Length: 125
Image (cartoon, rainbow, N blue to C red):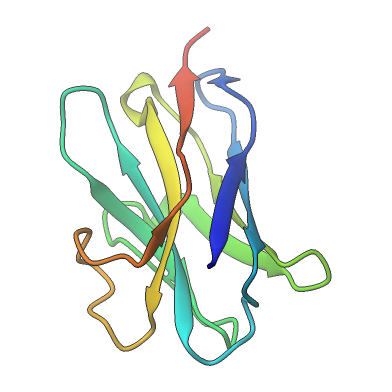
């Protein structure tokens, strides 16, 4: 069974860059089956899809976040990462990485096969 684990700082100052990494176990991020996603949930709000990286390293990001978001991977470590630039307190959320078959609609947030446990990120000075 695929396992995902997020890691990164719990506190980021406004205007800085948030960097998170998702480590994948028992599954390869280069296999042509799953796509690897980032999702977040601000306090009191629903899940928000942020972006995805596919087995071929192609990436797609939410239009509302695209100008501030980068998604990359390190195949030697079987990890993929999220960078969110110029953060504000509105970026405070629990951040998740997740996986689902790559042919699924990328923006849906209710059909993932696997989730990480989530990591709380607070943007504050």
